[in-house]
Image 1 (cartoon, rainbow, N blue to C red):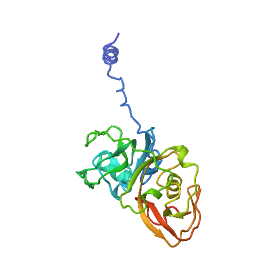
Image 2 (tube, helix red, strand yellow):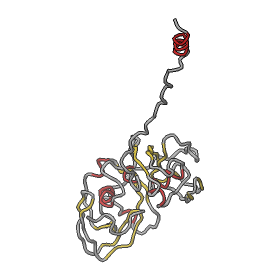
Image 3 (tube, helix red, strand yellow):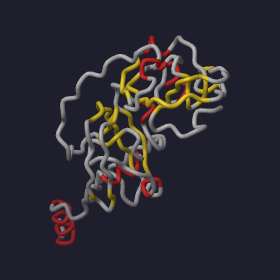
Image 4 (cartoon, rainbow, N blue to C red):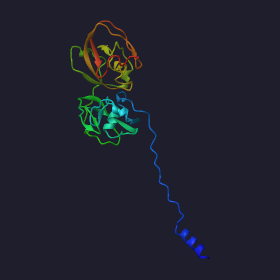
Length: 243
């Protein structure tokens, strides 16, 4: 073998011509559908829920709590508070939790949350440590058929509607209902729960000169004239349930 051939054989043996291994590229998971503004309508769900937030959607809305959050909090704003949303869109997974006796205010990741008292539903993000310890929540009693026994009182009532209770009963009015309207059926009409049921909070109201019926969320309410007692649900803006 010539000297030139021997040199070439030596270089090959030493691996001089071998290619370096390519770095493995880990692809980010595809983005889920955008998160809803709030998850109050999903209260009572046992399954986790994955959706996506962008930096733009995380810049708006109010948040109550420090994690868990009240279920009427702005979801993506809460996700930014939890450190899950930055400059790039990201998926977040929501776990639904019972309501709490109170929610504290805190500042994190440039988001200031607010405090609140008792509320019927909460949520937290999977993989994020809770800032507030879990608390025992007293069982909420089932709602009565109607609110006529509350007439003349001022204290709100928090009660629970099962799926069966949402399917039957008459309702008169929109946003403000006659106090002989079926509470759980009216709650579906108002949009505070679905036919899956859930906890609701209602407040007694004065009687009205008339009640306008409407169809909302699959429930038809009726018109009525003067009646001596009424009720309305907390966190429902006037006209929000109309179709």
